[in-house]
Every structure is written in structure tokens, then in C-alpha cells.
Amino acid sequence: MIDFGLRALDISSVNLAHQAPSALSALTRLFQPALRQCPTMVLSRLPDMLRLSLAGIDSNDQNKTMRTLIFYRNLVMWLPVGGALNIAPDDIETKGTIQIGEGLMDQRNSIVGSTSYKHAL
Image (tube, rainbow, N blue to C red; front, side, top):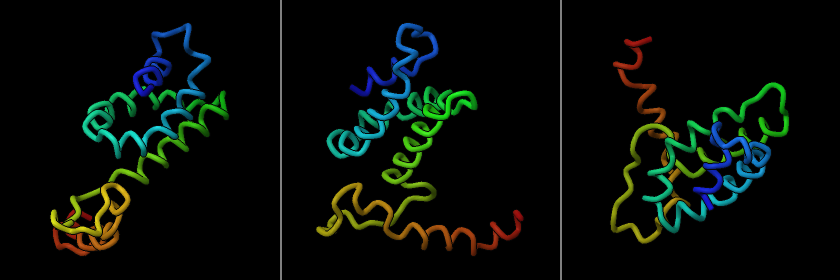
């Protein structure tokens, strides 16, 4: 299903162009379950997802733009943005991607508070 969605987003598939908004909605709904089931498959396709969905931001098509932005919001809800989180491998409380965002603000604050960050500004 993810591969079909990516084919529908490809610019060269003229016969599937009208399916781009539906494909974006399907990818939005499938992202989290697919990430839980087979993260390697999803993460290997992530560069293509990002590259092909970028064309969904279209000033002439509000529907497609909204579906693209909802897809991006869903994507960053389930993938960490920034540095690696320190989660112990034997932590029973951690349940895959559900806990992936814990400590994200601490990670962000440690980066922003570093001397190299302040020096770069």
C-alpha cells in the first residue's frame, strides 16, 4: 500500500495524478502502523516519501496542500526530530514509537544551552 501511494505521488505517473490527495491521506493513516510493524521498510522509503510529497504543497490546490501538511505533521509525531534520545534498551516501559518523544525537550534544551550553539549564533 505504501508503494502504491508513492507511485501515485510520482510526477511521471500521469494516470494516477488525480489520486495524489487520496494517496497522501492513505500514507498518513498507514505511517504509524507500518512504522510499528516494520520500521526498516518505512524508514527505507522515507526519503522517497519526503521527496515525492513535497510537490503536494501546491498554491493552486488547497486540498492537496492540507493533506500534505497533515502527512508531515503525522510524520514528525512518530519520528524523532533532532538528536538521539537516551532510552535504555532494557526499559520495559518503552513501547517502540509511543515513547519516542520523551525527553525531546530536554535534548533540545541541552543543544540550545551548549556553548557551541551560542557561539554559532
